[in-house]
Amino acid sequence: MPPARPLYIASDIYRRSSYGPGHPLAIPRVSTCTDLIRALGWLDPAQYHEAPLAGADEITRFHDPAYLAALRRAEATQTVSDADRERYRIGADGNPVYREMFRRPAISVGGVRLAARLVRDGGIAHCPGGGTHHGRPDRASGFCYLNDPVLGLFAWLDDGLTNIVYLDLDAHHGDGVQDAFAGDPRVLAISIHEAGRWPQTGAAEDRAGGSARNFPVPRGLNDTEHRVLMQRAVLPLIASRRPQAIMVQAGADSLEEDPLARLSLSNNAYWAAIAAVRRMAPRLVVLGGGGYNPYAVGRCWAGIWAVLNGLEVPERLPEAAERVLRGLVYHRAAGRNPPAHWFTTLRDAPREGDVRPEIERLAAMALKETLPA
Image 1 (cartoon, rainbow, N blue to C red):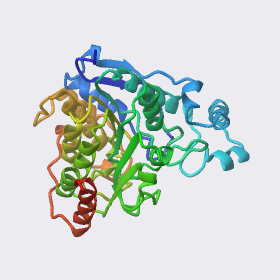
Image 2: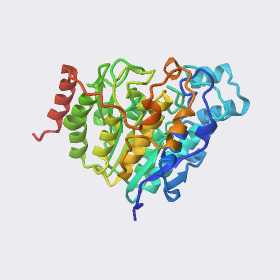
Image 3: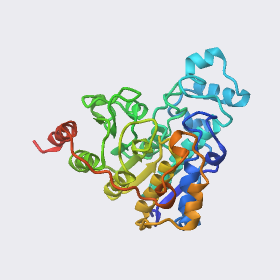
Image 4: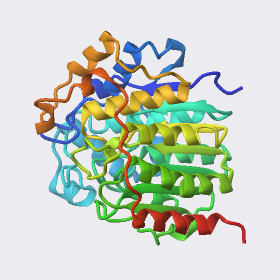
């Protein structure tokens, strides 16, 4: 029998772990989301599951054992050899050596695979510690050491599912997931991401052997444009496929307040997207991903949990939830004098706007493909 209510998978490792001073991931994200949810009274203990540390046999379902050994060495010694740095990109390209650099991603893998298993017979799970979609089989990439979405999708495939949709809402293209399933008819990877943004992949014409659909959007993407893409392109693509399961990577760096992208969504766009796909498959797992403003990320992901549970978001946060947000430290310029609504509300003001021709073209291209011949 499927779980009666959505399940929440997290770990305290995200509370005490940091990529190091000055790194974009030197901020609390999963712990902020979890603390907000608890402060709002939205998390029954029966819904909570601790993310386990994934075993080597699980991780090497996708990752090279030699790379896994290099990650373990770097964590144990807190150093990296020149050879390992060059070969595995550990300690390079924004992928630092830090105290939990193997355990943290291994727990992310364990959490996502647990989420997939818990909804094996149907249901919904939210695992905000997951979403490291850039990880490669044999190297670190884009702050991602292991690729937990890929390993979660493998858990479903190994259970016999043959029709899965992976939807990526992160501002950066989910290149690691797309490439892992290129040409595999069992997984359709759909990505809405900022055009021209690192990793410079995910062109509209890139179909990865028929297993991907990409929507590279211009800077300043607003809520109206996102809704048009969802309603005219993404949802019809999903509906035409009738998937057995959906995994959503809800990286929050498409929000206007994010420092590493130039899109202009409010968290309403994320919540609407999750609400729309929630009933389109019997199994749904929602992950985290990017997002480098702790106020914006925590509020967005907590609101996703509300959507998954059918809960009303209050206009004004209760005192306990406000204390969570007022306790954050954010060293970027925006954190020196945060606007009041970052403390007092969960929901952003909508960011509607005109629909530009680039968005119309992307939607029309997908619509043409989903219409019957």
